Length: 302
Image (cartoon, rainbow, N blue to C red; front, side):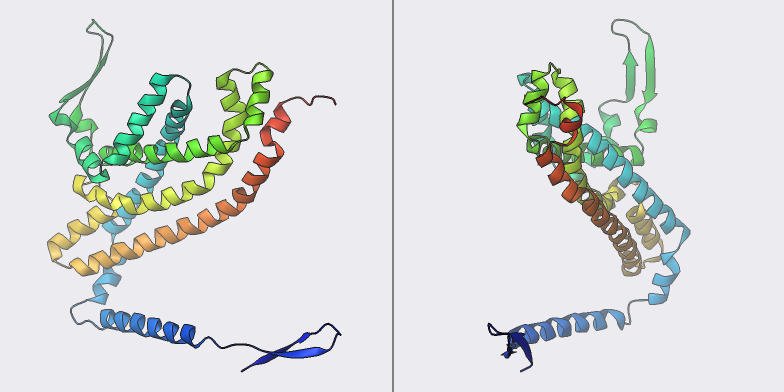
């Protein structure tokens, strides 16, 4: 066993034996052996054409699908975040009607599968053949054909964004409730309205707590967009499936899609780490030291 001397109470160096953990070594070797064996079976499989994987990796339709996936993830996340903030504020409102409506929204969208919601929005024309906005009891207004408005991309953005808003609402609510109540009480004492208190005092601090978990939701959204293929949203999975339906290279195109999803999630994870380092510790200091309230609220002389 390898020994490393350390200083004793008298200053003399005392050799210390480092214990070898043979169980850890054996389990690591076994895990690596199993992983290597499975990887070897995949690489040398004669039924898998790796040249086709290389060919389709940068195929024009695949790259177009990657762009749609990124665009859809960003728009759905923004929609979910904005709507989630509104729903969280409604949930915490003293108005019982607003609070219960927000609770109902969260209950419904968290309780139904995303796939069902995507199909519902895509087939909205069965319920409403035309979307009409007009002044009540008049013929003045606008009308759109639902089939033209509710494309695969629009249905996907609404389905993913509205579903994500229900989860964001709970994250935002937790962030708002994490802000010290003493700052809200001080804002009330200064005569601030509830809306101004929320806008100036609470939300700036809550958002610093909310921002890091937002990265997790965005990473999840990148992968959830694969469900969009059921509504032909022209995303990465949709385009890959359309290609393998014509050439029967199912596994090759699935590997291509997986590689792009891995790349997108790796980049998003890296950015999330930077975001957490930027806002994580600052969020704690902001709440504990008064943060925005310390700048906005006047200091009371002792």
